[in-house]
Amino acid sequence: MARDLTYINRLLLRYGIYVYDKDRGNMLKLMEMEIRELYQYGLISKEEYTEAILIFRQRKEG
Image (cartoon, rainbow, N blue to C red; front, side, top):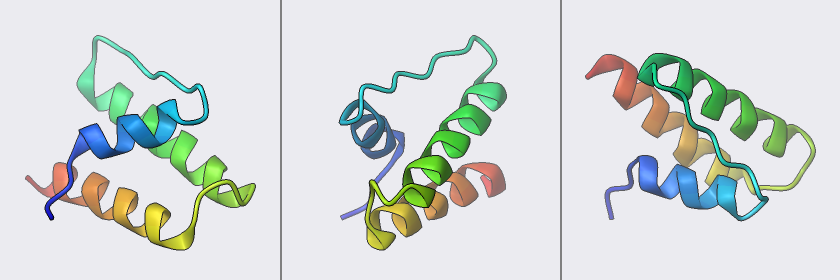
């Protein structure tokens, strides 16, 4: 199943994190920082982290 930013939003919302910025580039950077911190603190699994990072990379390339 292809995942997108909705997957990342739901992942962040699971921990009460809501990221919004008018500038989409800034919003993606903030979301990525939050995902990295969640993984660093052991709150999300390696699979969730990897999936989220892949989504961010696809967004940057596309």
